Length: 228
Image (cartoon, rainbow, N blue to C red; front, side):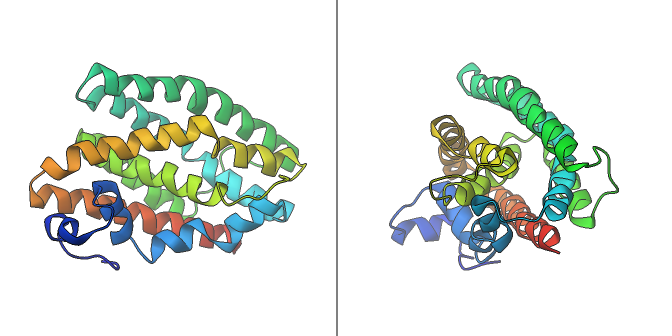
């Protein structure tokens, strides 16, 4: 289960930072720390990933764009208020289908990559988890998977030290997952979990934790795959 296997109610009594999202994150150790400090991710921050390895990584990561976009759409549909729907719609329009899509096309063209390569097993498993969350029409499960995908990437990208690599392949990929707007987006996802999670039944809290832990494990394995 991870370092923290106790229920949220028990954990929150003595936790220094009793946020629901922090319970989820701490429950996902050691995979969480392994993902956000992964040697492959750290090599991206330094611009030291070999071209062939970066190509394989981005080819597989691009296979999430459709599933991720659909999951964002499910967030719009399943959010419990108009104010909660707005950040999903904004991110969907401005980032997922514009800035990030453009980056993938330019990067894979520069690397001679394939937009539709054979899927690695971990890629297929992550797609399946995204589909499971989307088809559940459960807002908190959708949030759990999205939060791992975004918060973990902020986790490694925020470790990049200036100056960033000159090569756009690394610099823009870091910039996409760091900065004021991306931090606000991650903050929104966490805040939604923090708002809704404590009011769930213990059974539902455990289900959200299961999705969060599974997503975190897949993030770690995805970097393992990229490293070869």
